[in-house]
Length: 319
Image (cartoon, rainbow, N blue to C red; front, side, top):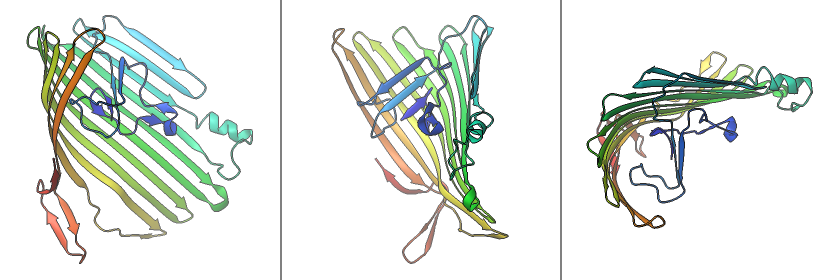
């Protein structure tokens, strides 16, 4: 599970894994849990990476820029007033205008794959505001995408693959008293993947995407050696896997109605982080999740009879 300010990032890499989607200019903290994932986070079989931007309200204007052979980056922090500041950071590569043409001129491109292209971009925006002595509001927005392609001139084939992440989060922090803090937030995550191929008069592609909308609220209580957290979380999912398209000359293939899978999961969690000494602590937590596959949905049986499930109708569920 990879999170950016509590919003899920489904593909956390650029250039097929060589670059991270996280711009270091806006990263303030990274937490890695190899095992023992906290009960406050949605379950996964493996580990958890939490990436958070700064919650500090800036008091001065800051501008940074970087220009290299294949990319450019810029970061600007603007204090609107004493209780509100914003941060905008952007990165963009231009290898399609530098690296790949240079390789082609030096004849370092493969004689088989000789129409390579690749570029990526990402954009981060954060806003930190203090509404009152006890209320703070944090907003984060991220979008980034990759565009990769290669051609095989020998067979007149062109392939293209692109993917894009989007993550939004809005969090309200309320300090109830010196020992109890309330955090409430909404998040939106989206991931889109396309793969396409063209040869002569034939064109085909496959698209997959995910959309999530989430809500989470929890209390944190600091009691002597205990840090207790209790809360609820709800996430609505929309999955659209492997939607095909194919066209030859003026003929478009009919693949029928493509299913969009709708699901939601509701969770309750409770945890206690007990510190005995500087070197000894115990963490205990529990999380209960109810996962539901719901309509609208069309289901075919072995006799090709179709069953229609209306919106929000439960098809199957798991606890």
